[in-house]
Length: 344
Image (cartoon, rainbow, N blue to C red; front, top):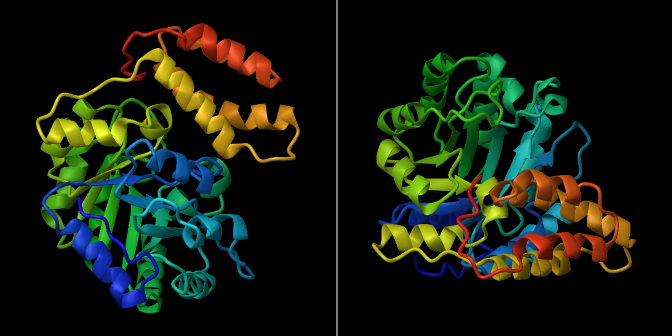
C-alpha cells in the first residue's frame, strides 16, 4: 500500500485520505485502540515491525467540561508511523462530544471515531461505549449530532449488540440512516466480552447491507485467521488489537499470506528482542523500576497467552518486581531458536 504522506490534512482532505485508503484493492489493516496500551511509544515501536495501515488512538473520554488529554494528543501530533490516524471519542453527552470532535479535527487526523463497543463495566454502566447499545434512540441522536459536527470523515466502532446478536438487525437500521465513512464491527456482544465466539456472519451482514466500508474486528490472531475472516465477511479491512500486542509481526504476516508469499514466524530470541524493545519504548526515564515492570505486565498479559508454557510464564511474570527478575523469566521461556506462532 502506497505511503500516505499528508498526515496534517484539513478535514475535507482527511476524509479523502480515508476514502483513498479504503478504495484500494488490498484490505486495510488497522491497529485497534486499547486504553493505556496502544499509546504513542507503542505506535512507534510496532511501525518498525511492519506496522498497520491505519492507527486508532486510545479513546478520549468526553465529559461535559472535557479537555483532551495531552498524552493522547501526542499520538496524533507526533505520529511516528507515517500512516493516517483516527481520533476515537467515547461518552454520551452530544454537545460535549460534538465540541470535542471539532477540537480534534484541528489536529492531524483523517477521521473522528465514535466508540460504541467498550465492554468494560466501568464504562458501559455509565451508558457509554457498549452501554449505549441498550438505548438505540440515543445512539441515533448521537450519530446525527456528530455527523453534523464533524466536517471530515466520521467513523464508528461497534459491537453487534449488548446482550444478544439478534440486536444487530435494529442497530444496522440506525447506522444506515447516517453518512458514516467507515464502520468497524467487533463481532461479539458487550456481554460476550472477549469470549471464544466471534459472529462473523453478523459482520458479513453489515458488509452486505450498508453503503459504506465495513472493517472486521475480533479474534484475528494469525495470518490464517485474518484470511478466513476476510473470506467469510468480505470486509474492507481488519482491525487487530490483542493479536498485535502478542505478535507485532502479524501485519506483515497477513500481507504475505494475502500476497501468496510464505509467512515467516519469529523464533524465541526474536520475541525476546521484541520484549526488550518494548521495555525501552514504553518505560519512561525517571519512573521507578517497579512501576516500569508493572507497566510491562499489561503487555505480557497478552503476549504470555501465545507461549507454550503460558500459565507458568504468566504466574511468574505477575509476581516479579524488578527488571532483572522480569528479563530472567522472559529469557527462561524465550531464549531459543524455535519458530513461534504466538497464538493462544
